[in-house]
Amino acid sequence: MEEYQDILFTSDYKKSSGANKWTCTLILLSLALITRIILFFAAKNPSQVESLYSASIYPYIAGLVGSISGIIPFSIAETFLILTPLLIIIGLIAIIKKPSLFLNNINSILHYIVRFLAVIYILFYFLWGFNYYRPDYSVIANMDEASVTYTDLKKLTIFMIEKTNEKRDALPEDENGLFFINESFKSLGAISNKGFDDYKVGTFSLDRNFSRIKPVSLSKFMSYTGVMGIYIPFTSEPTINVDIPPQNLLSTISHEIAHQKGFAKEEEANFIAYKANINNPDERFQYSGYYLALTYLINEVYEESRQDYFLLYTELSDAVKRDMAFASDYWTSKEGRIEDAVTTMNDNYLKANNQADGVKSYGGVVKLLLTEYKDQL
Image (tube, rainbow, N blue to C red; front, side, top):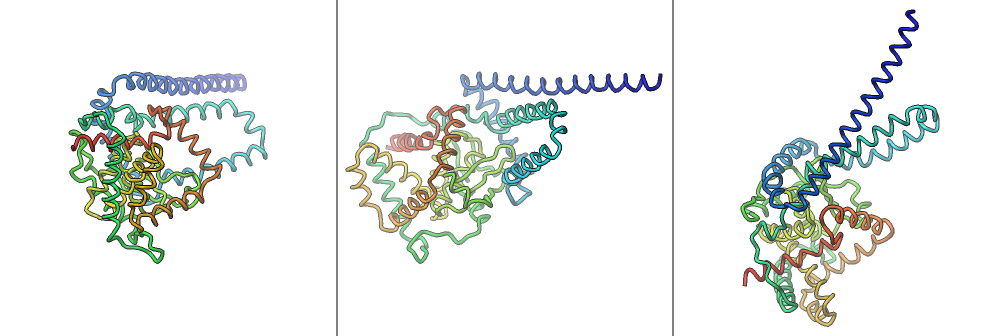
């Protein structure tokens, strides 16, 4: 009789465990579905996203998560990324050695995978991703989006050439005549934050610091993806590829900080990086800001008129030309299938998150630059 009761207990326990397994999975899937429904309404109500999330709840979320992750000097996200292949290899070895262990638990494994993906989806949007659905920067900043012409583009490009030449003139160079930086990465992060002092987008202030920026230890490999920086919402970490040309490095730091401050759209993060850097008391950051804007503007001219592009290019100082040539050679040397694959992934990611232009969104900074230019006339 005792033996029969033990068998009955085990059977009931398995049924209870199975029921709990499905309950947990269904709850998380339901929450993921609710998140998706909220996104649907968020896309139609950006002003509500701004008041209920981006300008109210989000700064506290970023501050809390950032204060915790900021205690650790290295990137938590990169550490997990490095460990993931190792864990996969260990798992595959375990399956090869004991395939029955995998087959007997395949149901549980699938449940864990589904739960993990659901949690990642939910956390991504509640920790940061809803910022993709806030009003455009131009709306928050009350910018007047007047029509612009090609003449406006040329005039602004000429202005940026003059400012870029001016800021580059007195900066330190290495033995090859290239702009270089001698500070530690930690110091650059502190200097970068100065550009956000007294920076407001409408009434929304960008002067609050959430956590430290972090270098990517595998930066040399990261360059082959064409990626200069990534903001990690789950840990509130702006992570930076430190192997890139220095003028790119300084604007990338501010770009990722802009993401951390709640501006998810790429063109807006670029514009904020430009504004923060040119307002930074450090002239190296100022140069990087003007260089960033100039790069997008002169490339836009190139698309409109090759003749004008080459005429404008001759107006660049020799020092700026050297920096541009070095950056071009650097990125050309990193091109390949890895970059193509990552670019495609990034394009799909951006399109799935309220940026219909995908990777072309980065170049949308030209519109903001021209809008500001017309506003100031």
